[in-house]
Image 1 (tube, helix red, strand yellow):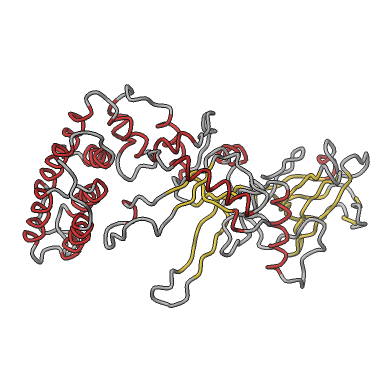
Image 2: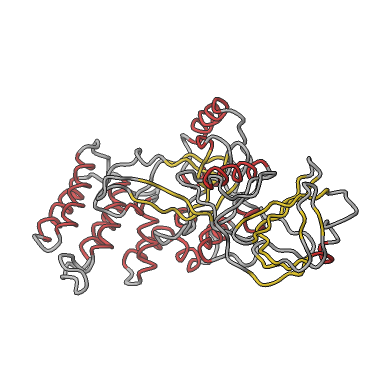
Length: 438
């Protein structure tokens, strides 16, 4: 995380007010200007570090933490005048390193990331992490995602605890044949980063779910292992042992039970949460609710693509009037209610025959008129795709369901070949499963 000393702030212009010399005999004259890129305090070394960018080069200045002369805590105003904010630089030296000039910049960035991690800090946003998700010097085998709820990636290291928010960029190589992934760190305020660090980590098995292409991957539930936020492992062997234990413990738990057991933050989200991380707020709010909470609130949080969907839907199906709410939601023309109804259906623990009847009714009610916006698609394609996923997840392979899906496929004829393919995928899954009792 970033450091604040007196009035100084990272990524701000500064003007030197008085001459000074740092511990490495670097002299800085009054009147010189630059951009303060980073501040660090190392209590083990009893040192303060200021990364000052001047004329395109970042220079690390070192001062004794206990020194009574020159720049230091409580005296920064005597030596620096703070100016306006300046966007980040691309060049950042490692702690104690020489100024970055002709040195290889990638090596400098790698060293800086290792230094950051040793202090449990987030990286500067200018550093490209290449294919590594966490800005630390630990083996990437220790890196895990936080519960994926935001519009950016948030990863953490299970060895040192470093948390990194980043944008994922790259190419899957589908058209170019050259696949690559890179992470560009995103700077967030310190209180928010500390709060994010309290969330469980996860390991998502993307190969462990049935392939349902061309249906949306957002609707697929991949097998997921949840790690408590305070889990730390010094070796890969210790991590393997911990994962084996967690796998046994979560084998019989529902997704909601596993999330709750992993212990999410108990404190409220900090103020000023950026929009790209609001999904964590929605999930936290859902975890504070009960089955007796306002139905409209639960419905809003339960809709399929909500980060809180699985938690809110679970609360709804625990209500005494769950089946009535489910029927109302599936019959509704309101997109939010309808989506929440499908989310409820995916985890519904009740009469499977009545549930299958409800889902078939919803499937038959979906519009098969040609879409005026998407050539080759029907108006109700998105709703039908979600309903198909629910049928597949529940393995509702009764003769009535098989006949209903087969009939839908025939009715589509050539009006939506993509949806016909999706029906084939689900029919294949159902026909490959033992027939479930009604």
